[in-house]
Image (cartoon, rainbow, N blue to C red):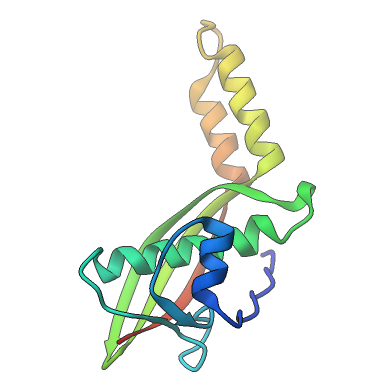
Amino acid sequence: MQKFKEIEAEEDLQNFIKLVFNTDLKVSGAWGYTKELSTIIEKGDESSIAQIEFTLATMRAYLEMNMTLEEDERYGAINLNELSRVVDGEYEKVVYEISAIKELEYKKFIDEYKENSEKSDFNMTEHFNRRKEETLKREVVYWFKVV
């Protein structure tokens, strides 16, 4: 399976997220690869903690799998699904399954579908089976500290 480079901790994670994703989150710390490098989330009443965690995990996935890679290596259609969650005091260890497909391949599948989906001889099952075969799935752990 393809390995992705871990994103290095930012000096000011909150500002980095605002700059790159135009999103205001009350966070600090690192990108949650280990308990020691947890992303620290300040409790607030604006959103659920689980939703903020999901948003952060999605951002990390896009940084790892798209934004920091060369154009022909980038993944798109990145989706996350929470698999498990363990709460240990202030810490939460969340495991996500990430599915994604190389952007160039995804574009070919979308174009093929648009061009052929109305044709009587278009085999939609075969199309989606090929797309599924091209989809990468990986499990990642993300550590959060909620304060």
